[in-house]
Image (tube, rainbow, N blue to C red; front, side):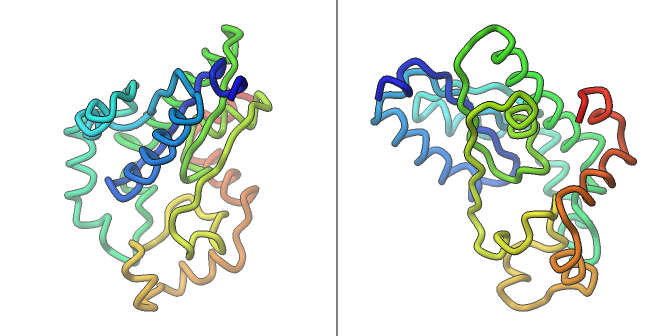
Length: 197
């Protein structure tokens, strides 16, 4: 209880309400157990939902960007990688913002706990790893347990449940590692190199 009461808990995710709702439940339980300062690092589209539960919110992107990204028909194509589609306007800015928030909180001397989804697309979890901060990586979809090295699955969960994996998706589950994917991301963008990752 004492540890939580003196710690700023940051909960970070990208995704849909299906990703955010379980994290709200975690936030409510942490509050019940004594956490006084809980801040969500999520897209503005979830601000109203978080306000309903009296959680602080730091924006990692605009509602318009989220809607544009989700309405892009390429996102739902099982042959495409959503990271490639939304990288410039949605994913990279969210990673940078959440990374900076955690970095600033840590450098200010604040006790920090980071909780998040999608480890490889989550700037807050990246910062927690770089600065050796306490963190919890949450996996909501059972199929992701075998695919933790993948930044963005090639298809929504409904395809995985129906067995409609693409060959590329199956191959990446079997062969990719976190290091392989981080190297790929480093080639795409210099954000990681600039931050010593």
